[in-house]
Image 1 (cartoon, rainbow, N blue to C red):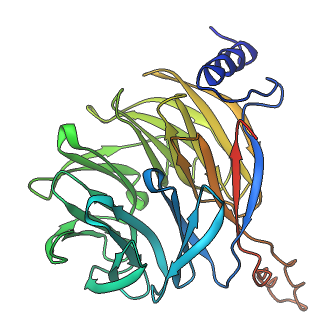
Image 2 (cartoon, rainbow, N blue to C red; image 1 turned 180 degrees about the vertical axis):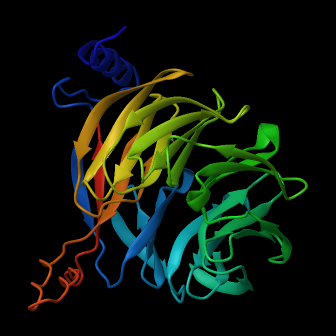
Length: 349
């Protein structure tokens, strides 16, 4: 069995082989590279990376902000996306799709101009959104509707509504199996959806893990990684069988997961503890934590650029919570105006 130190040494050699700068094993491979100031008001949710176009999309309040990752600057935004949760891109169509949680709609966007072309009605509170390229369809996962709305990316028409039987969170797809996998947070299960028939074909329990929100996928080894908030664990599932094959502890308040196929690293961003747990997939049945990266409180959502191996987390500054009056509840901490930003972590400069 490898020790943590020897595993980090092996990982460092692997990163050097990719042309990345190493750091000491004691510090771990990832560290803060920079902060990108974004500003604006409102909360945030998912981040979406379009690596080929060097664009990072941020769901922020009622807009989607576009960041150029070559210059790390804001280059525009999509307006009128009320309560937006996520943004999916269909590069060959030149289209983007925003899930508007408070509007119960999807905005179809021209990626070149960031202008909204039309809106499509969905189930209640569309949250996670993804593009499935083999069928050229967009899926929203509707928190209040407990369903998935399937939209033709070309026509903008709804082609199916799938009853998921619970509150959906993040989903991933493996086109080779004609499947989409989705976390059903309140049922402590993963469902498998047939992308051709638009039907749920499997329900897989994740116990003893609970309340999975984040998900990432390893297509080569047929594994998904589940960030489970109630159990503070990251679980690795064999998605050909639905069996949990490995579990590691993570911090509190997980909301997102990412996976880097080049380094075999899986990431869970935990806003409650202000950390990212980084685990190495030693084999298809073994995960080992190699670093607990300190980020910031509330930095709960994350994405990865597989070309540069950088991870991006959304964050902001907050004022101290207001002290309670006699017998009252403690006030909620307020976000400092225009403090919204992106934290960039990597292994180089």
